[in-house]
Image 1 (cartoon, rainbow, N blue to C red):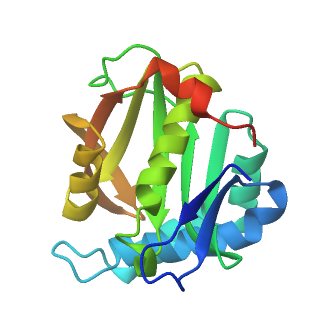
Image 2: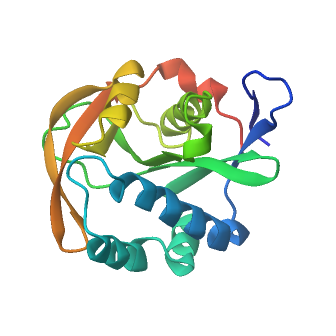
Length: 200
């Protein structure tokens, strides 16, 4: 266990725990990742992506085999938030090819951060953000955290701005054969963050 998150009022709500994902989590993580991705990109917000494109993307990006490979990769760390023994959210930080618009020193990518809709607004996203920032600074020796976020996802963009990210450019992102636009966001990492990262 890395950390605990006291769920918001009422007190009867469960307590959520953060921990590093293990290889045996691959199947459950694959199902959760696919569902939360589809909730985001297949929602009724403007610019909704067609189901055929989402199905193609899910088949190639979120299967158990793909998740198992990512969990076995020493250059990737995935953190799970569990509530009542079930996944409520996850985040993934990794070493990756850096877009030209990212100019910070020692950049590390926040590749994914998804929270189940039923847990939006409960503080889980912020706790995951704090943990992956500590991992990026400590385990990976990063000084800059960067990410790509769908340009139409206003909620996520607002959250990242609250976490100190600034917009530095754009990048293409393909969901199936559908080309979308991502915003590229960057924030500096606190040099002291490494001390707050617990081992997995």
